[in-house]
Image (cartoon, rainbow, N blue to C red; front, top):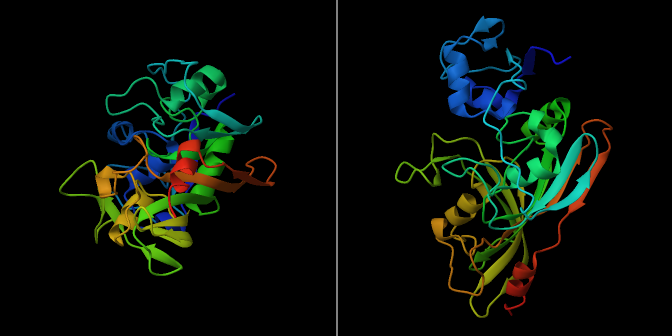
Length: 308
């Protein structure tokens, strides 16, 4: 029997954040859905109904809310034509490799043709996990980025893996080709990120943004046909567009990233020179350490080989 309540205990990493953002993070629900539940006084903090989404949470707060797995929602369409690779699967977790150009989940006017539509076709049991528009997705990748993603297959696995993400126990490493020669062989970009006040489609380094840190290390530098650096980047946090914004902020945008100033005049079509290549986490059920690596897609290998 499914319990009628789910509970989340907050760690120091969420201390001082808005309660609606924290609930959306844990539950996978949209912010509008969270706002609706708050307005109906259905979400409690430490046993007291939350009145406003702007309330600030603190370490050790307990959030309780209805379990929505049985709620009637518009069903995600199954699409067997969606191209993605299943790297690993068992009864608790699925690891997939997403190609560049594939949107991860429906939203912003996109209802079909996403990774989630493909997951619904291949793994129908995911319809009962988390947000019904995300089917167990633990995290996301931008449309133009390729590589590894974790999908939870049970509610318990989803909560555990989201907690691991929150506590920074999930190791994510990215391959990136950026414009110019990065000066330091390794470094950390530590700069808060938030919505760009001048462009709602972009994120920017702003004082009032969320804490964000990206580690990078140079793998190679090339001079021709123009100067580039190949980096290995590791996420300490996972903000929207984080690597792209952080690298652009230090003057080395990802190639192909038109939104953040990355050079696009080279032989790479409709994608970012960014690939989620390594992923490490603890299996939510067995607690075994799980390590995965995704080879570079052919188009990035070909692009890399053009530099000297």
